[in-house]
Length: 231
Image 1 (cartoon, rainbow, N blue to C red):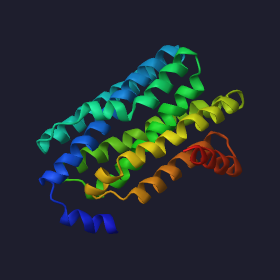
Image 2: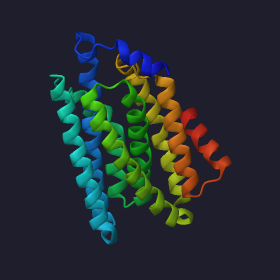
Image 3: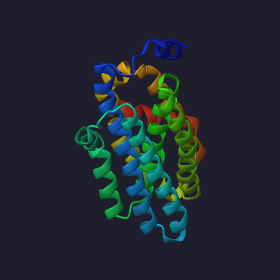
């Protein structure tokens, strides 16, 4: 695997690596922070699932602390402002949907888009991570599958009533993922992460989630293409 070979040559303490890591590390910290807040908001919207959702929120908070430790381990200060801007559009879309009571849209943004993005990023990062960050990330990614599964199951139960809303949410939010990936392509490359592998892993995770919810293979292809066409 090219990534495994690349990790041998990576200097985790070089100025270039630490500069790129300041943004990537900030992104994962902010992503976990966003997830924590999103699950708390979903708990308000879904009181019958409140206990479970607050449990997921606490897990995301632990993840955030874990990734903060990864930055400290390399003596890197995360670029928090960059990360907030990076997530700003997904953040605003989630807030808007929550204010309108669009639970399916909130679930798609958090449990599908953000979780699939995180899982893909962590899967591609683990083989090229430093030893400390690898252990943290391996533990986190196992939890993220649990979070993805929660959203999948809720959307599966509410598929017929939510299908049109999900298609609209997909059209609005999937293109943002591509813009986010393009924005960090250079930094990810410095860390040894291949963008094509990241895109492929995301599309596999996202497509499988849509399929599990109830969309046909044709629907999954159409939804994926719809997002890309609008990117």
